[in-house]
Image (cartoon, rainbow, N blue to C red; front, top):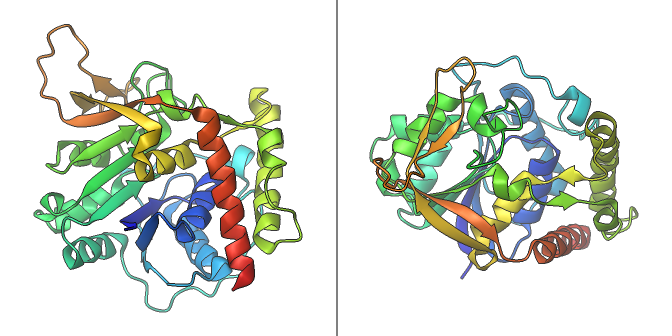
Length: 317
């Protein structure tokens, strides 16, 4: 039986790939997709999601929710990595939805329509989830599970020395979700940042004659160049794809329950995820943390396989 999931994403190249993969993944039933500001501003993220839906033309259309800007809007610019539109300049035609539903309403409706059966996979900042919990305070008890791509346990951050981007972008929302009563698992940068998608992996993607295969290439090649130029890395990080695989295929990972809190105001430590790892922790355990990937090479292999399967399924429609 496929797992019912709600995807909350900020596309973004890697989130766009996760969306393409998930829509055709036989292991899941995508009941809704919501956009959130993160890699790009909320308005651009919403437009990208609508464009992706139109481009992919899924066999069954999930409900679509569009997120608004976070209450704390940060002047972050990732144009040097992902281009001005977050998709490395790839332009997809889009007819914007006439009836635009707020992301938090779609989240509430999806959970209320099937309580305790829908898992939320968060691949961006947690703005929408926190707003949904504010809108419907009973919602956390009705969510099956929330998987969060973000945070760090032992490694340094990727946006500041202390903080991972998804948590840093809206730490108040992240803390609200962390404090909620729902079952939660976080896939931290310690895990997702240990995997690099290489040019050898890229070469295994479907040929460019396939429309979606061409889309993969048009986004990924500029991203490879940007990582080499900016970081000296011969490959790219695919954090949110790793988090998606951890959420949908638990056999790939090992987890450990930990006590966690989030710094919301520190001028240097804002967005830091603090885990009480003392010999005798005084904080209450409140989240499961993915601590191990059982076979990183297999996970990357399966990501490539699923992306290729999605491209071939889309081509046969």
